[in-house]
Amino acid sequence: MHEAIALLQQLVRIPSVSPHLDPATGQGEQAIAEFAAAWLNERGVESWLEAAAPGRPNVVGKVGSGSGPVLVLCGHLDTVQATGMTIDPFGGEIRDGRLYGRGAYDMKAGVAAIMTAAAELARTNTLKGTLLLALVSDEEYASVGAQDFVRRHQADGCLLAEPTDGAFVTGHRGFAWVDVTVQGRAAHGSRWDLGISANTMAGRLLTALDHHDLTVLRPRKHPLLGPASVHPAIVRGGVGLSTYAPECLLQLEWRILPGTTEADVLTWTNDLVQHAGITAAVTCTLFRPPMLCPAAARMRQATLEAIGQALPEQGAPFWMDAAFFDAAGIPTVVYGPTGEGAHAAVEWVDLASVIHCTEVYGRTAALFCS
Ligand SMILES: [Zn+2]
Image 1 (cartoon, rainbow, N blue to C red):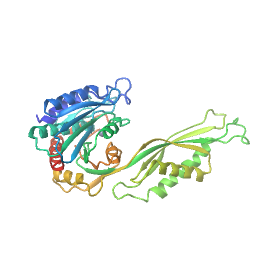
Image 2: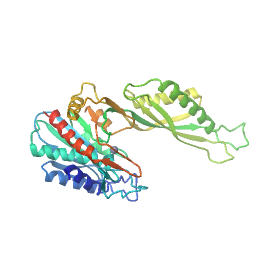
Image 3: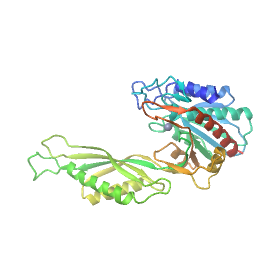
Image 4: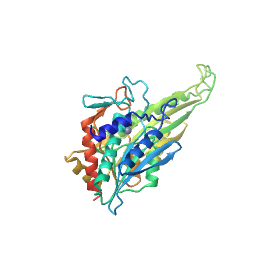
């Protein structure tokens, strides 16, 4: 069995479900982090744990110490919950060239591939720069691992090994969660002369949001990432059938393009509130930046050369940890294995793609760190 496949099977057999997503049985990353650090150290990759948060360690590994460029190969150790899976989530069963289990595809395959590539580079000892492995925690919830890593380490480029089914990804949109608390005036349900329904007022904003999404955002397409978008993910208002609703909470999600800041999102939302002619308090509860790898970045050329194909660049529809590296000034690309079932009932990864990625990651490091 290829070293990367044997390792992948071991990683899948160590559950590392996010404790935030499954509070009852989520194991977190401690056990898998200790295993990964030991596996790397046994193979000459100097490795240690860094506590990103209590009980939420990152594993950091290092190959080489020359004066050349520093490359990060990054993957996350946590997975989503295994609830509702129709296969053994932690069996690591291999069948017909696929390995099955929670995290097989998202993204223990990528983690196994970068660990195996690092072990091989440690054996050959030819890097002129430094390879850092960032095996981070908590990607599936709050990304404390990636944020902690970029606070502690600097680098010249990053390759994130998230599964892309062989696509060369150089950007994705960011997102912002915005709470809009719409005010009405409570009154007995019979008192139309006194009551103001916050739900009706919220409806005006919902109409304005829909109009904004369709007529302002949708036509402005980024060549790689498409349009920005907004939707009211959660609407909650009213206290009883015979009472004018005093308050209605709209929880909006904006998906944003490069160049958009948290302040922009707040301004846009407040403008829409004003145009709707309603009274509401607007707060941003979470902001995650977009990311775009600069066109001239060496990271792009090194990865494409390692892949050995003139792949077109692509944008990912969803958000990734890549944004924290990009925000720290580290040009980042994403390239990873093929499979199916991230967060779904049956998850598997194609083993040939894992071996291919192991080779690509090793070649990328050799080219970038020369
Ligand atoms: Zn992932």
